[in-house]
Image (tube, rainbow, N blue to C red; front, side):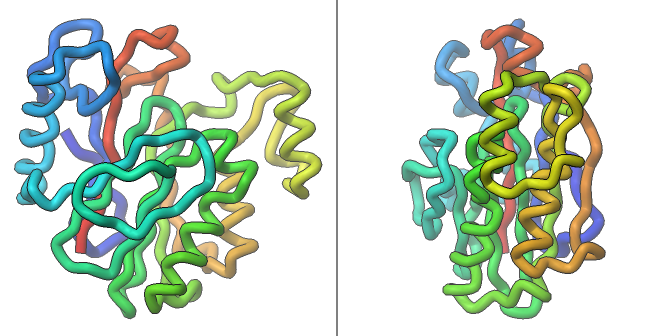
Length: 233
């Protein structure tokens, strides 16, 4: 049901598609989207959080818009693509189905964050925005540890020339793409490096959402479920 990183020492996880109650093609642990039965989605969310010993009543989540806006976590839904908090007990949740989830943890200053990093958020450096907002809450970049979860691999992420040009104009190094295929992991690691996150503090799952354990919007041509990345102090 959950995959976890080795470098984040608070409650967290990246959900798989297994362990829920939804019927195909959303089988089985679908925690989002609009096409599945809403009651099934709600039950899946509660089941998933209970598995981490977390309460649904403490959930902070987002209406994600593929931008780079960061919100300070508060109960219920906000609009944006990243959340930060220093408040114990709050659950930060990011929805994913090809875009990369990044979880942030400053264990010294007790500040956490979560970001939804598709190509649009990545090119606009949402990871950097998340770190800047964590710093406003007392975090220090040198203490921040980052876990990069499952997402679409470079081999499966072909884009148009206009997308490559956007990354080029924003100063991303050309090792972040090969021909028309972008490596979003490399792109986000570059942004983290620019934000003074220590390389040794970055953990990468290196799993592609095209694998059977996950939902993939691109592979399933839009008819698919959603996974979560969550973190809580």
